[in-house]
Length: 408
Image 1 (cartoon, helix red, strand yellow):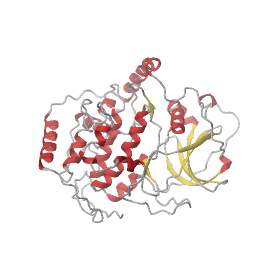
Image 2 (cartoon, rainbow, N blue to C red):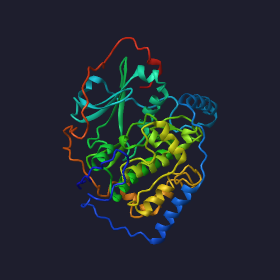
Image 3 (cartoon, rainbow, N blue to C red):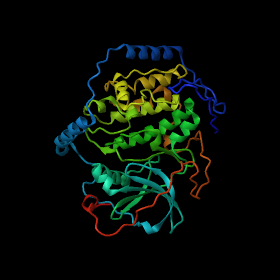
Image 4 (cartoon, one colour):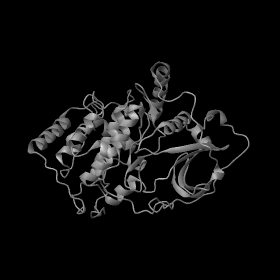
């Protein structure tokens, strides 16, 4: 399927583009007039409710509060799905087993490289984290948990990790190489997705989140940049740096401003509900090309999130609006996914009526887009270019951080 780009908008502000440019994708939903009226009434009622905006604590205040609460709750509320001491068999890997081809991405703690195994010729992605940065940013627990979670997770729409190793300065995670690039890049190129395309990608994300939640894992960083597309057009959720095993509640402030739920901003205890809020933001962005609470200043974004006033463009179909109203809501007693039936309430929503969930899980449904990549040759043409700096890998000698990463 070819995505045609709509015409450029002249304004720098978020626009509400008219539906166009997707002639190759036809869809034949019939929306009853009563359903449209119901969705419009829900939107009006939500916008008319008076909302009190509490003072937003500073980042330092939120982190201090979260640390105290996490410590108070740690011993009494955690029934772990993950082993406390690693019983995981380590992958027998070393840096000498791989040829580094190029950089696929960079971050606060290191880089992700495309590599080729010198043994089987296969291509992998290796995520490299600098130990000093991980310790300095107080991300030791998150990093160790990321490794343990990825070792135990097995789902068709979540990235697979093959093993880990370390040197005196760095941590290395060997992952599947997903050559189709980021959903973020595809969305920016397409401006926005037609209804069936957004539905397809969000349905696969929904299945992945439901799987994680069944194992008491909150993902907490859902956004297009963390969703990769494989060569067949299916998604893979990646980057578990903010994921956490939570049996009851947590308070940690983390995530990307545009996607953070209001209960996180106000330092209230939260659970899996925050992922369903983020799913709503993701669906909105895929359908419109922008996030509903965007502002250049994060503090302004937070204020808009707390107000939770969403303008739904008229080109959105009523079923989509109804779903979004019930995902992007600060009322946890109304947010779909957070109710008694969990993710089933979202799956059973009218917007997903034509989705056959078992077939989707089995990847027995045609994908709306297949990346133009050559299989098995390490094609990285869909990833942005990054300058290749000098790599300080393979360091030996004294390791001042060894006590923090014994299980790597």
